[in-house]
Image (cartoon, rainbow, N blue to C red; front, side, top):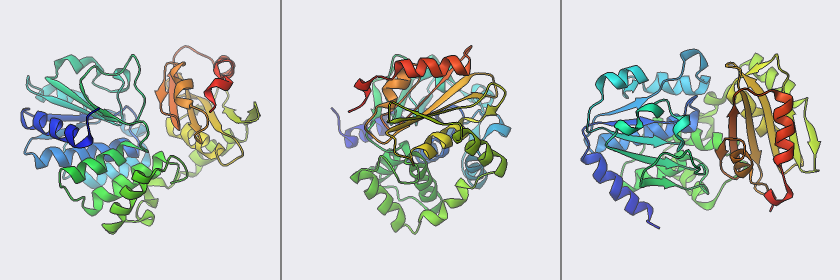
Amino acid sequence: MKSLKEFKDEIGEKIRNSGQVFIVSHNEADLDAIASSIAMSYIVRKLGKPVHIILNDEPLKIEPGVKMVIDECRKNISLINLEQYRRISSDNDLLIACDVNKRKLVCCGEDLDKFKDIILIDHHRENEDTIKTDTKWIQTDRSSASEILADLLCLFQIKADSFLAKYLLAGIYLDTNKLTRNIGNNTKAVIERLKNIGIDLNHVDKYFEEDFNSAKKVYDLVSKSEFYNYTIALCAGDEDTKYLKEELAKAADYLLRYKVDASFAVGKLEDGSIAISARSKGDIDVGEIMGQLEGGGNMYSAATRLQGREIEDTVKTLKKIYKPSFQK
């Protein structure tokens, strides 16, 4: 297996040989997605290439914390939507996907064959929907894409400024449930490097401020929880209540406070699809469970979205899928 330094050299060459670079993350971008994308844009700019981040989420559906980041950096970073990308694309374009590796989760999924080359940088498990490319760095044992990008910045000898350091720390903070899970030695080292720039958790708190009505929905959902197999917490909304993806994630995160090994939050999204957000303390592989429901992730954090399903049937299916073999 290649080292991160070898991967750094490989992507450096591909960036230099491209005409322009486009960076994309998963739909409904969260703080890890936007932070890792911005960090990657710093690398591309250092190598002297024009770079654009494709963000095609509907403005009203962008998470408040992500919107704050976008507003702060919009003057210095090219943020474009899918239509704008298609107007300026050319034959020698390079695509870099951060915090995602599945074709169906990127807004430019129908355009992937148009790119000269594609680079994947992610911490989610691969499956049959993973974008086909030989240039990828996917480490499921890392806390976040932000952690991986922080290491790449060091290899490219790029010192993060205070803004980028804030964003990367926020990305790590999000994907570790506020530094309570999936914290390895490398994660701790990255956090220390970011703190040495003069950033601490007080600087990222504002990205996690909650809207009262949204928070109430989360707690109402948590109050519907049931505990089964002694180790699983599961909460499910009703058919009439619509949730944002991040609200389900917050509910699943909240349930890990209890004496459980894993948690699942099930609810209906605005488009009528059913989403599941799954979390684990490390003894149950929720990535494998979600993989059997058309989703993915890693051992600690995973999710899926299902079309044409009802909540009750989804919960029954989820309970049938869980087997003791998923537990260490």
